[in-house]
Image (cartoon, rainbow, N blue to C red):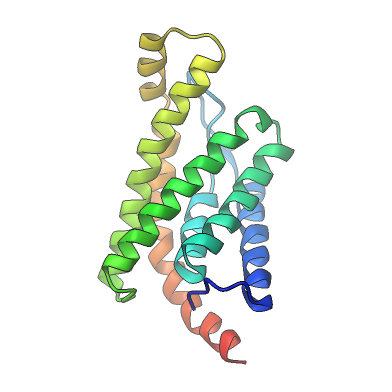
Length: 183
């Protein structure tokens, strides 16, 4: 169901995924104490990866930017929402490139691999985002490096959940979304 064209259907699905991502963060959010930022466990990352897989890199990234970035803007994370949006772009590039290398073959091993790759990418990007956040509030570089590393537990949990949730939901939704597209 990869859609890279600007058809009405692509716009509707992009908006639908953006709303689902926003709701996925809003409904289930478990705060985790950290030295940098205010991290929490949520399903937004997994839903963003699903949007990328189903809609393609551009529209999936757009859905993630709207969903995750919109959540940040409306829930007290506005100062760093631009970093979240950059993370979405990096994850979209990595996942879409991986899917392209798999020739868009969505057999289980490929989707599981892409879920794991997305989770690992998110760990790396979040580490760098945490460094920038720490530097934005005036922390020294060395302290920012250490505190950002010590603040990764929520991201690791989110990444593990992404690796698990993406294949499960992908195969649960694949048939339904293909049927809707044909209708």
